[in-house]
Image (cartoon, rainbow, N blue to C red; front, side):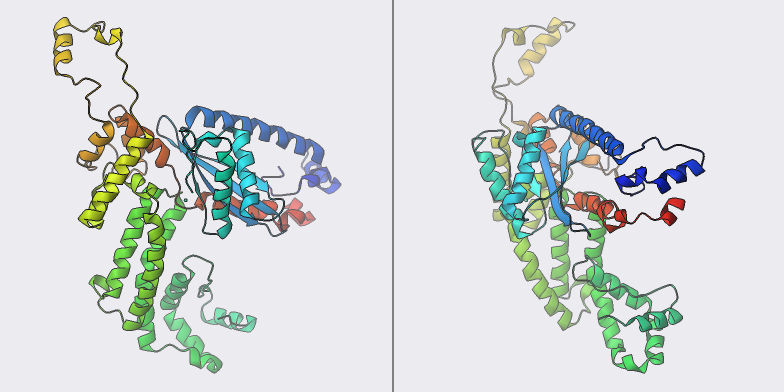
Length: 471
């Protein structure tokens, strides 16, 4: 009740709240705040035990995404989501931590929160990556957590796998409604994704209404745009639209690092076309091209960080429709060859084949198989000692033609379903797929949790009124 209606626990025991139930000829099953608190606590511990068992049962490795948020009533909260792939190649994610932060928001203090959670759920040996924003304390968090875990696990231990990843006054608002009752121009907010694009789109759509508003209010005549300026806005909107599309795409579901390289490289192509006035951007003026040049320099700064982390390239080859072809097509022959070689060496080091032990039972004919077939297979099948590593077999074979209609072409889980169907043929690569395919490229999931928490943990939960109860 308290959670679903976003009301404070103590409200359940209030006479007015109880009276609301009695007026409907029903009784409130939970009489006091303590009873509600204890019941929630019991359910939490039960759910916690279930998550711990699920992690032990179905996860090989674990990728974390995390963020810190401060509620309106100044409660600092850290949220952590775990991402993994089950043995049946089903993508799983669970909220593993949502706790108040005591003390400073330093990387060291945040690392203690993560470490406590890892110990409580017994998942420290499975930790593979951490995804967060580019706040400085996240780098310190990873370094501090790494140092703490080194005290428990040898750096060469196979289980130790962590890797660091203008405003109008109110009067004008009312006057604008007289010109455009139902539509307005969005604000450009520096900290909000795509707000510049949305503002420009609104202005272009409401160009007639904006002109009418300026005619009615000569005090803002200086804000009237001329035709060349409207043309510039159209060009800017055309450039910003792909950024908006990518943002909306990755915000609908939790994106993984498999999608990172295609997105970065497609935006790189876009910006280069603008800078060189090619393709759809032949008419872009020099001022915009100069601005894009500065944007390219900034983007290259982040791209170099990707180049320093091999995991992006490892993840990209795990899509059987792509394998190494994207790397080969985007880089020089020398650079692409080096990257693919490093990916191959990394996979072979992380996923060595099981040691071959010859057993007498291997030489026995399986029950139900004819003697002739048994001898034929013994003669033509390669021995385990000389069989090609499935890592080499996967990387050296052509990419899969994904239009064969065996699996829905537009299925969002196409890659996972392919690996489920082909794990027998590529057992080592299938392990890598379970490890790296769930790694998030952004902390979208935990931001959704914080968005849901604004009502539960914000000021509104302290404002239970009779009107709210009667409603």
